[in-house]
Length: 75
Length: 384
Image 1: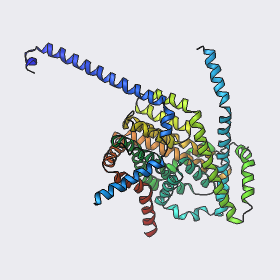
Image 2: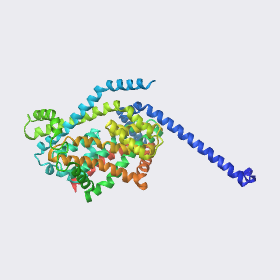
Image 3: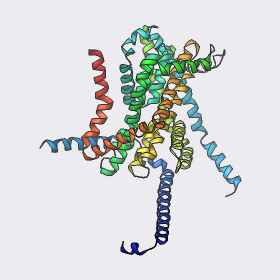
């Protein structure tokens, strides 16, 4: 911070512009990676269609967890 | 790979799928015939007194609950909306059917909510998956909170659908003017099933037609969904790929298209749950897709309405149009107004946050929205 106080206004503006540019690049890279992951997921759509079906064993496991949670709370 | 080879491959793939496409066409025929059978059966069973017999459902809250519970039990809004179209063809007044069709929108969200419970083993994954499922619940409940009172007070959807159906049908037959094309087409199957049902005496014959029709609609829609999932997965992928990185309107359109492709909003909305649970798509990214699914699913009721011929065709078309308008207006209004748009997201995030800490909140939501509150509404209506 102390170093910044010695810099001229032009230098500070230059650093700020450069930082904003970097932030923009990082954001773009993050977005690119997010979209790449999304495209990959859609390529495996059959898998997600399978996962998007009701799994009654899991539903039962959920309600068992609820009961366990309630019993734990009442103790 | 040359262009010719690609075309050859596409042609080979197309011909190898021909039996599946023929099966889809046959199942659509069964669906349309079943709706026609329900219309006749409902008329016979009620002896033309559907309005009096369904007077208990003239209270819109009862109609709403019937729609919610029936869809939650059958796990298919397409089946329920097609059944309602058939019942309207059999004399059920459109005004009574409107809250039922609104209720089917809520009932159908149970499927993806149950799918989200499967992510319970991982806290963060469960939070994301449950939020993805319940954003659809919150949206559909909000749509009813807005549009059901408007319907009760002004008959908004009924009036508009009457005008639209009148313009489309006029005095002619909806299915094909003068020729009763659909009647001729469905007569072999409908006539046979009516003949079998008529072996039973009086209203039992009508009831048998309704039950057989309902079973056939359920069978046809389930099998069409299974076949289209395989046949249309490539197109669904293409639509979804093209929507990535685009705005919410594209998301709504892609949700609509994918749902039309697979003929099941439960399939498309449930598909989003694991995608959100894995963290690949954010809640805000899947939200428009869910809304598109609401619109896409209305195509089934329109298809079912083509089964109805004669004087009641206009009413069957009216209720199918109500289904379309309700969903289109709800998306336009709620998603169009920023202060309403974010309410389902806030609701879903808040509830998912609570539910990920204590599962009892999720259980209360599932049992409350789909069972306890509907039954309480009926009890209150009966008692007061």
